[in-house]
Structure formats: C-alpha cells, structure tokens
Image (cartoon, rainbow, N blue to C red; front, side, top):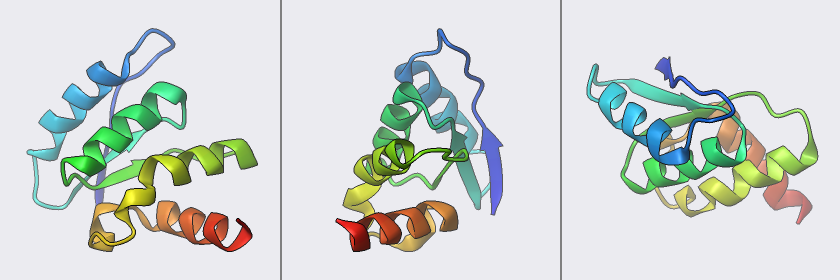
Length: 99
C-alpha cells in the first residue's frame, strides 16, 4: 500500500479533492488515496470508491466520524477489500456490529 494524501484546507471542495485523487491514483499500481475525515473529504472518498479507486480516510476521533466513514463506504462490502483501507474496513465491521 502506498498512500498519497490530497491537499485540503477549509476551502477545498470534494470535487477538487476528487480531481487530485484521480490524478494521484494513476501514479503507481498500488496507490491508495488518503482523504481527510471531513464532510468534503468523505464526499470525495465516496465518489472515488464508486470509481474503483482505493481510499484511506484519516484518523477518526469520534463515533460520528466513524459513522460517516461507514456511510460513505458502505457500498464497498461486496467489492474487493483492496479498494478500502484496512482501517476503514475495521471501522465498517465495528459499525455494522453495533447497528
């Protein structure tokens, strides 16, 4: 796994992050695109997963953030796990077992 982190600040939109991620994903065969655990970052991650890109979400510090990661990536359950980071899949399993 080789993660590439998108640039983001408070003004960066999901569309801007997704465009960065699309470009970075072409750099090497085993790229993971790292998005911030923010509203816009999760929107970009959800779109990326829909396009078959592997993603990694930055650290979650609250149950609300973990639930948001689960919601953004829940459609990946039947997809190859290589498209979702190990940390993200662990969060998904934990959230699924508590719902």
